Image 1 (spheres, rainbow, N blue to C red):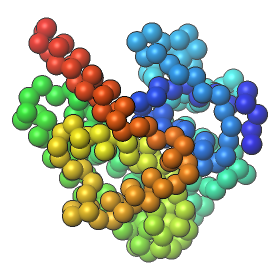
Image 2: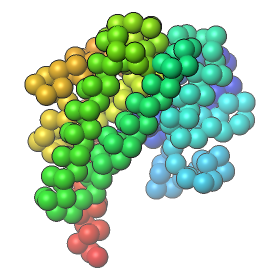
Image 3: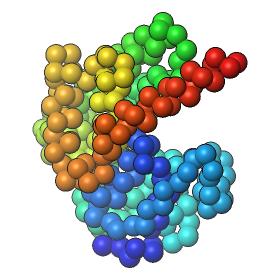
Amino acid sequence: MTGGCELKLLGMWASPFVTRAKLALQIKGLSYEYVEEDLGNKSELLLSSNPVHKAVPVLIHDGKPVCESSVVVQYIDEAFAGAGPSLLPADPYERAAARFWAAYVEDKLVTPWRQLFRVKTDEERAEVMRQTIAAADALEGGLKECSGGGGGGGGGGGKGPFFGGESVGYVDVLLGGMVSWVKVTEVVSGAKVIGATKTPLLAAWMERFCELDAAGAVLQDVGALVEYARAVQARFAAAATNN
């Protein structure tokens, strides 16, 4: 375990991107100091640590900041290679496949999903959900490839229940950080992003992921997130009305 002062994580409880960093730290067995940020009144530490985006998460390791959740997760894996399981596989092809699906999660799943709580009309909301669900359908094939011996992204080099093969890998952590929000989206929108009918592999993956000790330790309470999401929607709706 690392010393408590060596690692500091600047975050915000509802952020799925902060959850990714927490998951990586938990899986690697690293102790750290967590600092909750008020994003309406950002601390000088956050602003100086991430002057470009001024966003969380920021991991500070021995005084040096690392920003952006996908970069933070890779940094944790590489900087603490001797602690806990590896998140990115050693094999170059499998590592490339993991990075491919990680980029897919960011570009095709997360990007439209982030618009869901900002759209102004039912038509816009329906289109965002269509894009998000389509991305989940394609990701179903990615999980089959990575975990089912199709030659991709697994850390175990063979079949397994996760994107990382037998154990949780890089893509699992990035997608896993979104799990509570996937459930919230279903409550708020009434549409199922991941379900046993259309995406049975992802549905089974989500159940397995939620059973992990690391997930239980850091995933947000869905009920609290639903309240937060509805408050965010109300703010955007009010701003749109005022404009």
